[in-house]
Image (tube, rainbow, N blue to C red; front, side, top):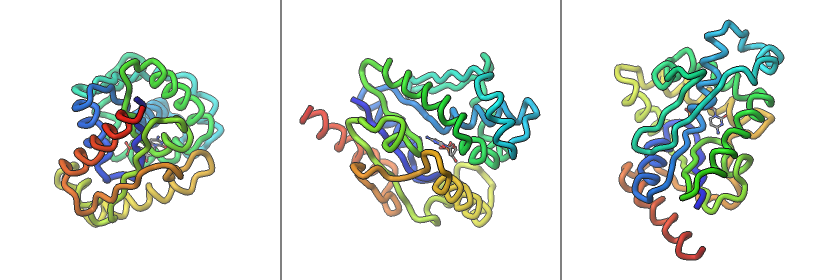
Length: 220
Ligand code: DC
């Protein structure tokens, strides 16, 4: 059972995907964390992230390892736990530019497909292009949406003390960049189920996706 969950930032993708994986005994992969890890490495190693050729030249250097236990997902680069550093505003500001580079996407897509292929009991993979590009044959594809206001309110709640207006502007800018890039942009797959989470609680979204997975399982 391969479940692809895509959508923009602040729609509840990570919380939903983890909880669904936990409830159904599946593993879990946060692909945004992989792009963030690549970005963190570039910034830390002085690579000019405004230069796609400079990024492409070193794309194979960092060893990025994802732990897929939904109880405690991990992400490391060259053996160093980077789960904290990849969430800084600096990495968040640069991640769209780094993840738009085709060589970055090719490398990370390979990692993602290998992890999904090795997940014996099934996996929930969350991101932007999972249903469209990484795992087009996923058993179930879900596309989560929410109004910009709801997304900004959730994100600024997570980033304690941050201003909702600034968060909203940053989210809109990042979504526009992620949706307009040439290679594997953020998009809903034609066969994805769209769930608008604006007026739903997290528990309701989780329940909805669990039901969709169970329905799919019953017909497999
Ligand atoms: O889900 P997140 O906010 O941690 O993702 C960070 C960035 O990574 C996002 O702005 C775009 C990029 N990303 C991507 O291009 N493709 C994915 N499958 C997941 C994330």
